[in-house]
Length: 127
Image (cartoon, rainbow, N blue to C red):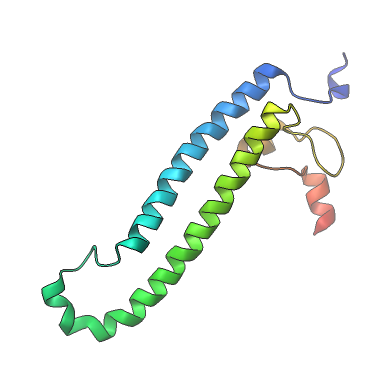
């Protein structure tokens, strides 16, 4: 089979991507856990007996911090979902195929963005 006519990645290549994605998924879930932990435990970096003096000043910054942690957690959750979808595509042997052009997404792009579903060609057309 001509290398340029390749329509999907081999099982060995898919396994390589599966390992990469599984590792990214593990670290992403850890990070997500840490973010949600800090949301559920907002007083972790202060003690209750000294909180009264600085409470008014800290309330505003605590609210801002909580909002930004919420945004980070939401982004992390979306990234985890994307990685999990990529694992499903590996199982279905459709991983690495551009959903617009039907061509294989180059390995370099997949290594950088393992959950990509568009080739750069298709992505640039969207812009």
